[in-house]
Image (cartoon, rainbow over all chains, first blue to last red; front, side, top):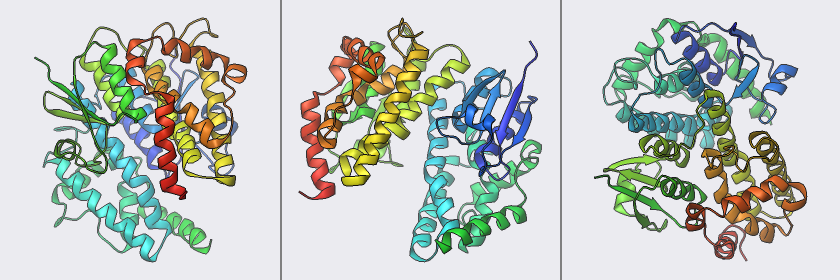
Length: 220
Length: 225
């Protein structure tokens, strides 16, 4: 049967970017449909009626949502170039660190960009501390996946430009060669991959977008 | 020889998932009850990042986060399988298990911790979650002809959701309403009864009255008397 694979995504969303990176890394063909997140399309609402969010993956008409669940689906459906380790324990560790980055950074990055003063400082402090935790978890390996890029690399690395945006807006370094030398080398290495260069948003474009959102929220 | 230890608190629905999973696989384990106001050295060592329960320690290696632990239990020990075999069905099971954490548990927690309009909203959200889960159970159980979310087998999503049933009585009492299980969510009603026949579930779930007693104290802590 002819395979039909669609991704409903958005250029600025790390959750969308991670799915696109994973598919490209595995050499899987798909069509990307950029979504308007204000005026949501019928297709998006049908594909993710529960959360009404991107990304959604539609494979031969069946929709899957929640980016981490999509990544696992991709890994199980197309096992070549595996994202997750084979061994159950190592897999559990990878799933743990991926959940950690989303748990800690989804809200804190958003709040660094949308707040100021004490609230912003608190988010920055927490984020800096969590980066140090990840620095230790990386243990000086080239990637979180070991010798080659894997699940945790993609889940964290898709936020690379947002990290730069937070640094600019927050006036702070989150990853730097002095405090987090392993992460610093890792992010350069990750950003150098073709499948990553293709999908990470442009810094100036993302920064403009982030300032627009920031101004909106600061006015509330 | 496998050494398995679980760090948990009796009240945690997340911990109950782990216990049910281990019992279903016939895995022998040592249980350690944690007091969250006085966490053990072992807990702080084994989950330094979150300092939370449940933690599964398998041959001295910790696994944290209840759904990750459940998947690990499924993969590390054979015999029955919790997750379905097809990737799409696995994705659905994971999605709805995640839903029980994000929407169902969250609505329940808000019922316990809030009052007035905030609590009314939480109740509406909880009932909406019930509605969605009833719909999904209908699909996954072939219209109710099969007993579980896992179809004919007690599986991942069944294990993920059944612990919350020990909190239904608490939501009703503290929210001052009745969850219309029999009339509005009949498949879920039948499903609860079917699950409660299993030894693993009977062993792991605390009595609803004990849960309510605990939750009343919790509510006082949030709202004052």
